[in-house]
Image (cartoon, rainbow, N blue to C red; front, side, top):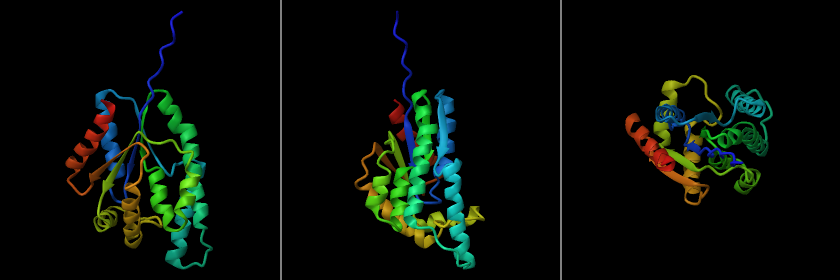
Length: 216
């Protein structure tokens, strides 16, 4: 009896960057390019639209509303927010990411653990954020889109009416500095740093080449 042919595991690719860096746009570009290559791929994002991700988005939006309108609402503890991000990630891995990878599909995710390390460490201990994300699957490739916070905020101001609590210039400057520090020691898979301030076509080419090297 011949052995059953084993399905090739898909590749796990993550795009990272501060808000306004263009991760969502580039995921759309990657997906289109992969389809033309005949690759099976799934685009996804964190926080998710699942039950925990939806709760997390509600928490972030309520926090922003209370700050803007000075409603006096009790802020959510930053450690609790970090736990929600980690819980949403583990649920996402179990129900979406791992099944897709095991079926042979590539997964391209908008934000992952590195985002939690950069964003949640602003208000809570970095060691704690690392610890609660220890069970997260390491990506095969992380692409970091490097954009100056002032440029990113100009993009946000031109394209978005509603913002979450992190989409403020002062916060984005702190997040950018956190990413810079983290990237010097982040070793979960291959990390490629791309200049996200170049033209769309140039950024797309740089991102595609990074993915192509992994696929080939």
